[in-house]
Image (cartoon, rainbow, N blue to C red; front, top):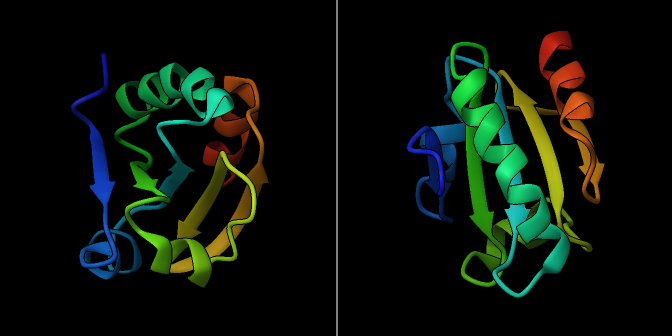
Length: 108
């Protein structure tokens, strides 16, 4: 079951939710048809629940929000991009173990 701590990002709310966020943001670019994305989803949910005090966790459906996918040159999914103070600070392409994402969160 998806975490209630995850913010769904669209072309319309990206700036207010990510760029203007008062804490670092983890954005998962995904699609419903993507097998690795589905495998990563439970990890994203866990991080959203366990690290909500440190990072805002967001998801972008690349099929519904092509503008954002193009803007950030997302060529493969899943792609997880970390933002701090509105700027991209890290990008992970592919599905990784939870520890990899937690390490990045702790460095922000």
